[in-house]
Image 1 (tube, one colour):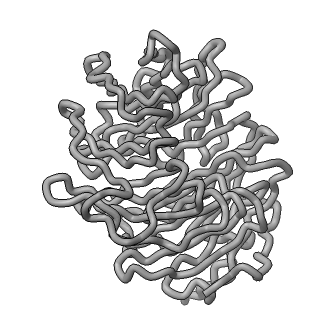
Image 2: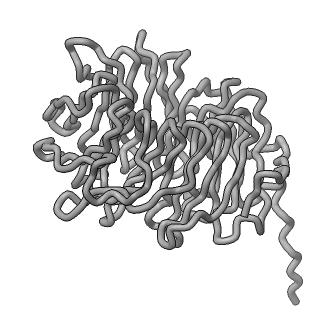
Length: 383
């Protein structure tokens, strides 16, 4: 099941559209719209990927974006800065931007952002180990609290926003919170009662993703290359229930397949050596291994149907077959990038792939005809 030695076919340089947008990060909004932020230009922009137009841009003077998150309804975009400020842009009111600073005392940099599934509360994690909840409706901070002893690597919501999950970069803890009063409901660690004999993470936790259904499952990766699946049910049990194959390098990307897909029980992890592991959670078995030729993977995303796994590393984005037998289809490489790809997004229900590159361009690819021009329609004769 290994595709490590395969040379992926190159996609021709032709794309649907390539338009200038000095973007360092992309997030999908509604339909064919994407948000982009630029660390160099201190700017947040909304683009129409179908026309290639930049609809509107707003400046954040002297506040270079470092993190970006779009709400589930696709109309609110939050981005954080290295100085600890958070800006929220609601496209329903496109000419103004709301801002706040969660940590007024020490201006701790923001390490992660996550919108509540209903889009009304933003969770903000900081390098100082604090969690802040910002209520966008009333415009106020809720329940600031010290969550970890060191920097927080990631923060995520579970289904319907009933639980908040955080992981620490140094204390090797996965913590589950009640977002209504921000009480610590449970911790998952090496000493957890329900943890399997699988080895727990060593040296901190670098990445986190949560399964967006009522099963309350999380996937975590660590600098030691370990990748673990944990169940988050404080009322009954919290602990590791499965271990994915370990990597030989630090893991910085983990991802679950979309819940609405025909194959929701897929998960994937990627490491700094370019290795990618695919896992079947239902059978608790590895499905395949892929390789990005020793290039650190910066992003992983499943397609809407979970039959394709996309990964970005260096100046390439590759689409891997994520079905039961991955070796049946060769991977596809999306080219036309002369510099490193910083981020990518799937838009129009997965019909298009949009990439953001350090050369200041956004490129849109047609996923229906990835090899080039669409085939001609057959002629129909009539009487």
